[in-house]
Image 1 (cartoon, each protein chain N blue to C red):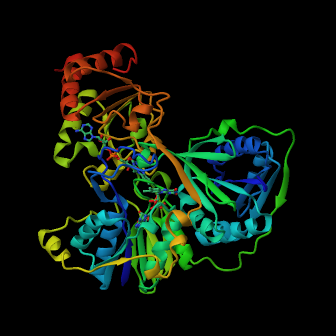
Image 2: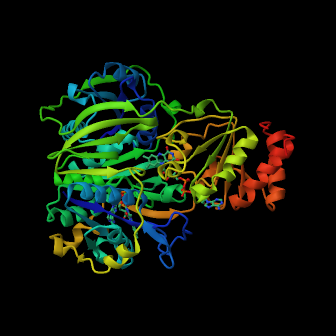
Image 3: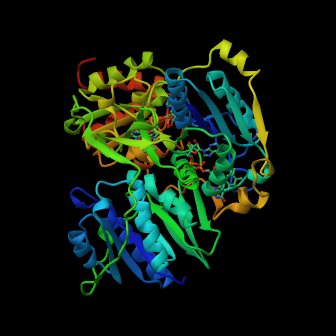
Length: 262
Length: 330
Ligand SMILES: Cc1cc2nc3c(=O)[nH]c(=O)nc-3n(C[C@@H](O)[C@H](O)[C@H](O)COP(=O)(O)OP(=O)(O)OC[C@H]3O[C@@H](n4cnc5c(N)ncnc54)[C@H](O)[C@@H]3O)c2cc1C
Ligand SMILES: Cc1cc2nc3c(=O)[nH]c(=O)nc-3n(C[C@H](O)[C@H](O)[C@H](O)COP(=O)(O)OP(=O)(O)OC[C@H]3O[C@@H](n4cnc5c(N)ncnc54)[C@H](O)[C@@H]3O)c2cc1C
């Protein structure tokens, strides 16, 4: 089975987010990054399928130079090779523009299955996967928690609200968006990290994949982010100050006397 | 704005879902601000009851797309149905709930009709000629303002709870119900095999009076005794955010949130939980909420009554001790 896994590099969950001078993005300098959480699970799912079925995992990432770090990590975890969509023209797109670029890069790979995360932890549009599938004319299913290959079809378990699930069958080729928790994500071993240095990363520009620069990135978008900002606090917690002992003493008193829950 | 605004509602096995009225409420506000007619859209195998409920609201019309292929839900059938309706009627703005179901097919729809799509919106305002939609990227830590960049058809999906179902105003009389014909002869490629609930939850957290919930801030499984002792001192149930269960540090039946349990204890103490919307929907109606987090900007503080900003490994053991003392068990 040949599988493409789309990975996005995002700020680390705990990273301090400083709004850039452009007013719409996060300042880049010294920003700690990681592979988007659900994309790590997508990669894990892809690697497990290849381990049981044979084939290869190709990771596909649209991002700037620094995304190299995320790609190397994916290769160290076990992906065979990578395609890096890296060109200024790719930047600043919306999910549709990003999906258009990813589609063009993946189309020429003849894969059986595409896995993406269910949404990015930064922009969080939750659109890229299904748009990619629609552009290819492939069936798709989202929020997937289990995959059972069956030859020309796959059986998948989709998460619904409030502890409900659904089993579905889809013909291949297909696209799945993977939900966090599908299976424990492996660590990159030292051997994997060393091996990754020799693996192939193909850097592509729009022209390389048959697109005009004005079809992708900011030029190809239909939505525009005009401002990124810290939300005004309208309501919210009474923050209890003081060192641990003092703050806790005040809290306990408030829980007893004000809230009357102790 | 030229064409109509459509509020696409969602129906399940039990009929119209209540989030549908949140979409109507938002649609009414936009229709008034933009001077466009608002139409409700029903998609179901049998939409008559839903149509009647919606016709009582202040809408110009209710469009009913009815076809046996719309139950059970499949992305192919829903996309095909709405592509056909949109091509026939050319609405200018189409609103959806940002539900698990719409996540599955509305991006496909946007691609098929070449629409701009702003998803997971929490508010809107009008700024001159622009309608500005507010989102909460970075897991709710920041806000962003978004506008549409093209003149074509546009799509917006609304975060659940962002608009109030109760704000959906009643109309003067029943609105006209229009059957919207569609041809769904092409088979859906997705075969729905079975819909089921994973396990009967072994722990029913919905009855707990006090809950201590732990998040990824705990760092690793070996540190769990820190919160277990607090739960024990309080006589509380221990619960968790999704990553804690994904990592198998605690069993899945302790997960709170949109894909876990919904709880309303008298007291909910959130430890090392950032407060992503999918967690908040499971606990925000608790009586008193306390958050302990080292990040003063963590969104969890916005739904909490009391907060302590600091390292949980300093605060939680101290809290455990003082609770024990207060209860005379220290
Ligand atoms: C300077 C700047 C300006 C921007 N301006 C805009 C703007 O005007 N309008 C706008 O809509 N957005 C804008 N963005 C954000 C935009 O680039 C999003 O990242 C893009 O829209 C993809 O959406 P998403 O990340 O929310 O993906 P989602 O749809 O949430 O992601 C789902 C999955 O798709 C895959 N995926 C997503 N992105 C990539 C990627 N880059 N490489 C590989 N796989 C990927 C992953 O598997 C991911 O889990 C801007 C970003 C920057 C840095
Ligand atoms: C469709 C869908 C369904 C989902 N369903 C659910 C669900 O049912 N339930 C759920 O919980 N999530 C769910 N999620 C995931 C959700 O979006 C968040 O990713 C998740 O809730 C984050 O968990 P967290 O707060 O524990 O982790 P993080 O967001 O990583 O937050 C950890 C927090 O701990 C704090 N911290 C770290 N170290 C310390 C310390 N030493 N002392 C004090 N504080 C510290 C940090 O400041 C941070 O705020 C769902 C997501 C999607 C897309």
